[in-house]
Length: 131
Length: 364
Image 1: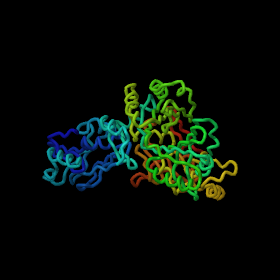
Image 2 (image 1 turned 180 degrees about the horizontal axis):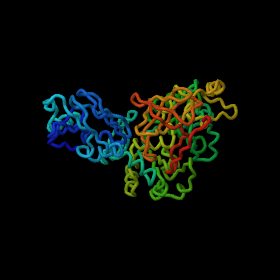
Image 3 (image 1 turned 135 degrees about the vertical axis):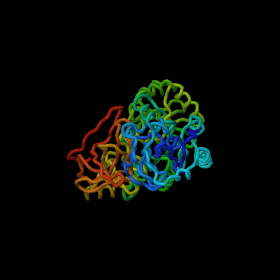
Image 4 (image 1 turned 60 degrees about the vertical axis):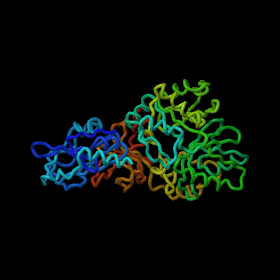
């Protein structure tokens, strides 16, 4: 059973979003996603300052097996990325909700966050996928 | 979906199961990279019971195999000896690759790929029609590959008549009771492949695991074979490519007048001159090379046929088909950007050691 922290928001593409007090959000991939991908060996981070629409492919996580796109969960601008992943992509496997975060985004549309799934909804999505 | 006798054992170990040519097989039991290192540094075991085990018998089996295989079974001088070969179409395209063992007298055993089993059987039956050759698919047998520097020691502890196993030279096999033990594999490490009755495989698997052998999935099998520079059927070779264009010329036995299927086409191809060749690539920077990516060299363009991350080298490697004159350096396109790579002669790794031989001014 994969871990799903309660205080985060989730997308149907298995990204998580953490809201910060300064109005930015931190984005990563879920425990379920990192397990499914297997050992990560390379992360192509987005450029800081890049502007993305929701569902735009903005980042690539590569496991030994395959390359997978990470989609931008909200409309916004990239304000920073997790440079530690350049040398240690395995942080995403080891700590997907903490040290394995991917990027920080300043959302353009306040309130868009509410459209994302909460932990219970995400858990239900995983249960349905399993069927 | 087909299951090997070890299916439940894999699920119980928490393996991630994937569809592999119609078989539900373990891709990894946790970390694919740890499984890879276990084989390079110690010992791992793979369930390869999905592979086709075909027995050939009959008075005309020798002439049949000399016709259907691109390599020549007359090289098999000793009982138990093994030979790697392709089977070709008349036009030289590769139908499959396989290992053939001479089990003595008029009895040979072929191990070929799971995904191509139906096609292979149909081809063998067509070529054998009208001759005295009996083909038997041994669904009653299972197969484990025990690979790594400690593999021989561990297998010897786990079978009777261990002295017979320890005495085996590479590419030889022996029969120990109803187990066939072969010093073969697909990892670039020393090791054994054990073919045994399906009803015994779960107990043998448990015995190996109790001795500290690491269960390894097909994910690590792929990165191990890629580092070892071994082709994968369906990726580095297929029906549209001849062995001459994918680094397998050494497996084609032209010697003498033996009329094997595909010979005339390969002769014509050689006479016309080969336009491309298979090479190894090492990506200079970060990123991961993948099958299908484009390559450009000073002599024209090419394609990656396999690519992944190499746990032993700590960077990305690939097999590629490039223009015949290519040497030293090339560029690979990853998501619309060109990245520098080195051209090398495979293998990348053998027996736990990195072997990188930069290709300069020569053809393979």
